[in-house]
Length: 504
Image (tube, rainbow, N blue to C red; front, side, top):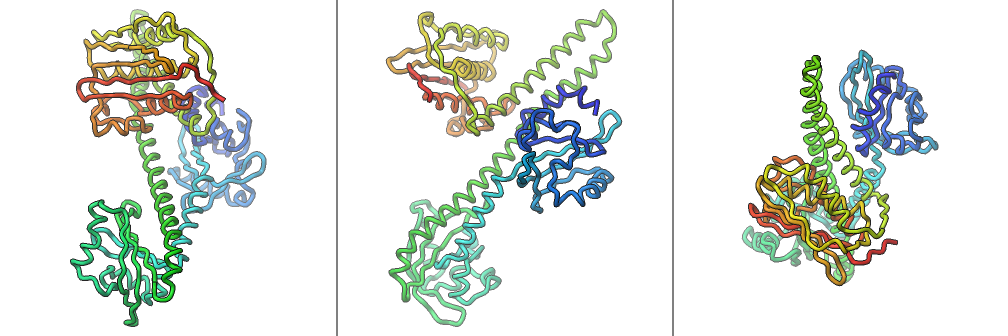
């Protein structure tokens, strides 16, 4: 346990920016380290988990078999994911249980064997799954027949229970069908013409009437409502079919309700896909942005051990400064991740006060000067000495620093970066004008998206978080962040704040 006390600063640096809980136990299943996310997740005070048995986090119903599972896991010493195919839960200090997903990873440190658990609270995911299950139940129990078929092959992907009941076909039989097999009065050309407005995007939904033939050969009149949608990553048509033989009036009233529920299901599925893509981008970003500075730190540490002579002090200091710079960069990344988490959870508090604009601008430019490339120059704004600002000073410094650092980073050597201040009746605007690489037109609509980076900026270090954080903070304080840009010519970012800002 001593080794984690000796390395607590490194553990905190690498773990405190992670929203997932991290628990490390020794071979006796004693907790030797836990990050603040884990302590908050399980309801413990800082360092309160240290030295406790892992059993305090495991519900009673799982404890009887846990020791054997743990021994087997440590003997194999392989990574393991738990909770994806099982309903796994954990125990808070107050005795309440909550669903989790756990990733286990054994490792050795200083001759001792440990196991690290990455714990994810999946309460929200379970709620979403329950909601998706609810919409799936609506799909199957709808009084309307619902058919989903592939947009390219027209082969059926899914049909609901009402469709099976009314047509008499089994689901297995539908797998070999397309709509042309059951709709009576449409030829191949007719069916293709029917779908054309959806394929071209001219219409979002089309309605038609036809006859549908059951398995037993009988036919019944139907009203078809067709729209183009997505099933996972597959483009498909959703057809809601009304049997209008005896209940035409009833189905008309039901139509709107079924359409609304189908749309809600589509949105829920799209949201789940979006969350998955966001998580993938985040993990890729963390892996890339941490790997480079950590490699630099390891290289400098290795070289430091070789410079043992007094005459080599200058070389030692060079590598110490490299390590400091890399650690500072990692710390800034973690701070960005923490800012995102606070913004998402609404834990941000603002302190609006009066301060001279020149003081803030001087500090930001002073710090930015240390980042300038060869021949780069910052033009100081004119006539700002008498301007006092009523705003959150730290947020304004964060935003202005982010914009100025970006201008330096994405501009070549021997260029000028200008800061222009415009004071109007109801707002104060600060522009950062550079002569950099600019933002491609097709990518400008995404530039404030979290983790997004333009193609021409991928070779430059960055997380794609800064502009997203800056824009959210400004909008929370009734300000705005806008830009104009032209590729290979430069960008102008404009931060605007109201003359008087009131935050409740």
